[in-house]
Length: 294
Image (tube, rainbow, N blue to C red; front, side, top):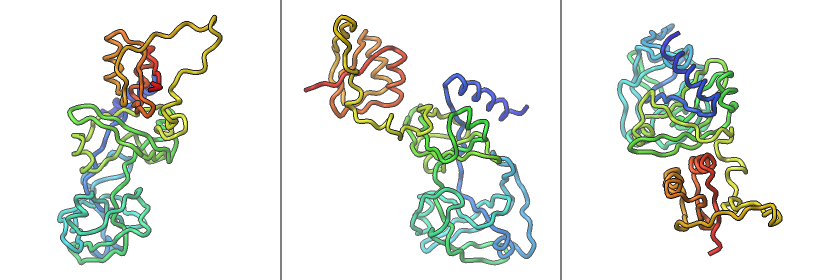
């Protein structure tokens, strides 16, 4: 069992207990080539020379590099990934697109219809591809058993949260499930640098719901957070009176601060935003939310 297997086993055990973390792979600019374009760039009958295996089974970084050229500039020494694909695809960041002078389109890998093209230059020649330049949509790879353990299916969108000096939440992480996939979220270098993330960083899936926070349960208006209609007075204990300020935004830290002060009710404005982490923490500490009528 290698280091990756051990990591996946530990993460799987945590997921089974309800704590769901996924590792990140930071993806630099790269190119996937079809065999026809590979021949035109490197010579007839050319075969890619593997340099190192990638995180996804059967995928590898090749020794070969090419130049990607656009109307305003070019990117040299762009890595080719293998094996060859049915259609050539260039995956870059928005920063790269500004340098190339190409309009950006966020797409899932393989969905290149209607995307911009560019010029590719190799040692045996250069070609003009009519489409195929994309900014890859952020996504999460899982095998079938991993998806079952994490409670998601192919095409679901989840949210990932990172801590650290630049904490934040990444939304619309599309799940890619099936054979040839292994647990890892893929972000490009622009996204990773913005949040201080590196390959191997563990991010938490905010909700166990496969919707990733986008279903009716998670998008109901704040008024739905008010207590349910009271039972007859004789059966319902009087709830504790809220003592803190009226909140317009409630985070996990706010919940913990309230708990330290001994408060059991958080008073919220009608349009108050409550983070998923705050809801979870409040439930574990038996703290409730109350909508202010003011």
